[in-house]
Image (cartoon, rainbow, N blue to C red; front, top):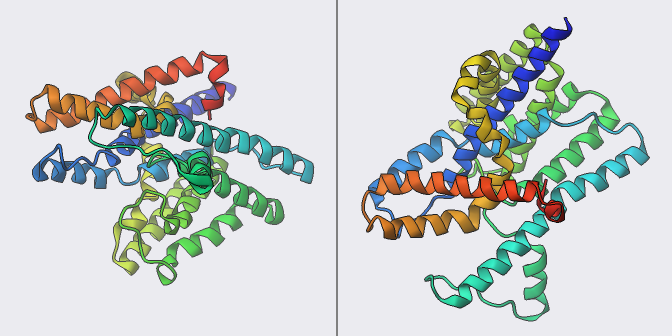
Length: 332
């Protein structure tokens, strides 16, 4: 029995890493928007894959719910948890942003590239420079902090993840009454907060069903039914995106041996480093360099090599930070 539980836990970890491995490719691809260096036809192909992997950011909220620890049981525990959570998510967000902004400011002063990053002016400019996150992906960290904080606060009151799931699912399914649907299923649009929260809670719900085959299947089927129903009701595929990570996790967990051969889970292990370091530094830099090296030809090859080199450089930097105690402020 014990060996069976260990095998199940190992399959779950590998499955989560595989899910994050595919999702991080989608995140990097989502930010590959360079119409001045790529033709309309090539950007058309990029947009197709961006749509196919549109669930990528919701997958990270889903995985965060999966990996969440038990909720605090007292006021003191909750206060301690909030402080630790802020250090884990908000402090790295500010550190990343300051490093990016300073680096871009220095590079902009060289006038080597066409863009220019101006020096902040006045108190307002410097406050924005110090506090507003830089990069197209850093909304994830403060969003995750707020979502996890609210979810654990409500769970402390109602003591049931199923009740929490029911409340948020109702808001999610009927969100069309209050919000217009976002252009993309990812990004900092506040209208996405409900969908992100739903994905996080589905992750929490999935954790409670681990090891119970019938309940796991029931969680998938119930959420799939609601997602398809909402998609038909509102005539949009937006509601299908939060369901994809749930289905893929089930697939990866049940095909662990095949996944181990593919080594896809290794990419997922570095997903955090890739997420924070790929933009707005490595991705545009690699795109510019490869565009010039390939003499503005072989556009699809440019895209593939840009993705590959960005991911490799981000992994290398993440490895350096992981083994450098004085850089732990960049770990989240």
